Image (cartoon, rainbow, N blue to C red; front, side):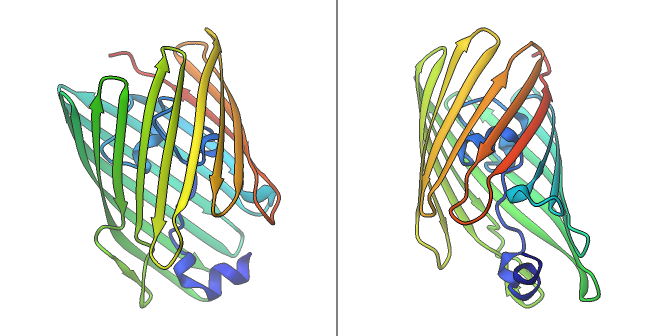
Length: 254
């Protein structure tokens, strides 16, 4: 894994799941409310404080830590979040500042990310990256579109990944919903995703998902002892061990 990260610079700034909910849903963010969703679409905002930890692909030397804080005032939303991958020889951190605006049936947002990447005895560098997003709300349907690295930032002579993400969610009831999504990175095929959410008890919800290209299955359980939200999830990988994820969130009241 270390050799891949060092020798293949386009692997820098990968779109990693930044919460247990995203791990369970393969990155679909409209199924279950979570402050971490802003990372994937800057137009999205859910008030609260959330922290998560995982070992990517169950490698104990690949710990990944995340922290998210979001709030709103009138129609404006503000988000501050960070992620840190802490391999002994490879470290990558990002700090994300997002501002968005919601009015009636739509929301728009933009993010500025500061990414810092350090490879032992190789380089120590940083880059600024811009993201943008749009969400449309109509009755029981929510649809969102975002572009990560809209600025086409270059890092160490290479353009960082430009990723286009689209998702549509349909609320079946107050306790259940379905999402479909597409993700496209330059020079790679479309990735298709589908996921479901069901609240089977006032304090328990379950999530499941499937991603095609590459094939991955996600599942998770969310405990809802208001105002806390505790989530555990697992996401498979075609060749590597699954990624187990744990997140704890505190939701702010409106």
